[in-house]
Length: 291
Image 1: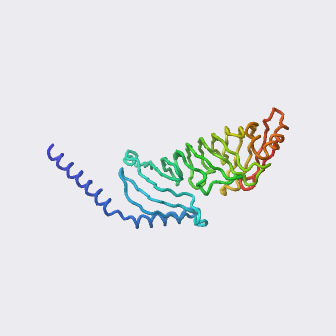
Image 2 (image 1 turned 30 degrees about the vertical axis):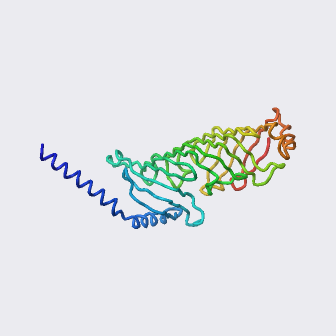
């Protein structure tokens, strides 16, 4: 028994020394070069940069000011963070099917997720939770008739190839609070649409992003929407097929320049001030019309 304890003590001591030496002499520059080479081989190629890269505890990697951008658009990062940590799940590591946990501080909020790699480069499970993310700080947000701003909270799960999202399956929910939509072109004197909450539930299957419910609760308007977006690898070319209703709040619009004209526009509806509409076309060229 004493011999067993003796050798167990040696093993623990050796493990402790190895960990200390790794943390003290971690090959940060070599590992950054490896990540950069790996990103360059992706489709499309990705450029990776970081302010610093160090080991963390529990065992993992800690990035400070990491920046990811596409090689064809190096000036615009599709993701950057103040801090990013990546670590394996200890239990899954022992079983040989590693689950990776990711935490980040970015765009004024926090991101938490885990990734379970599958066969052939696919993801068997990917979940992501976003809290208080300022979406107007994200440069790759598609413009849908104007700039969208607000605080984003969301939960997303996905299964499939990471570089071909349209070929995977997933679901999620979105809450944007204290937001507004700045219109690309003023409409009857209205330059922006402020709202208190925008809620949405969606599911992804066979290349279609299906919105099962979308609701808007704002100062000037209330509305709802359902429909489908047929995803394209080039996001701006994704096909829109959405239908919804919108109802103005008269007390608010009457205080705005152009408000009376807007109210007259909505008085043509069949059910009071509520009007039905459809949105078709693409993200690049959306087409809105009342029905």
